[in-house]
Length: 197
Image (cartoon, rainbow, N blue to C red):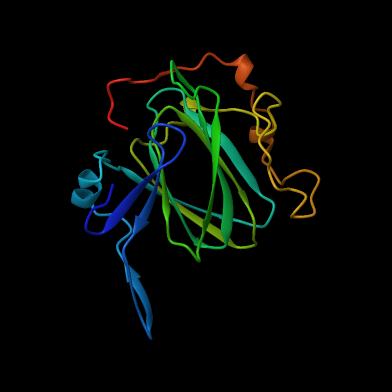
């Protein structure tokens, strides 16, 4: 779906989209709008955002796979320096792609954005030092409902490119290292079949 300023590209998971902004380039550099509410509504993403987040990671840092068990967050993710191996896992009960995942490489060299709707687990591996990720969320952060899935869940078997980074294991927080497997969780999310994906 294409609007005046943004194009929406479907992925193999329903409701997860890559958003390509229109870019104006000249000898000085470039200008783009990364979000405009009316234009996003025009490409079928009507959600409102209430919080902006910014993370900076060194090469080999893995963050995720995260979700909120109550007050689920939709996320609009982009990279302004460096690059990431970005992963979305569908954990919506009844979804035709339940437990399936996609990978999108987001980079400062390609200003595409990733829309992750509520009901999905999300995480990324930083591929470069000083990688800065900005993301808008549709719900506030509630630490008491912070949840997630282990990055190395064998049932998911996500091919994190650690060999390319010459690393055996990623740099990960103790909290993320202790996350449960998907098989140990009862997902609180349900797939909405009447949604127009």
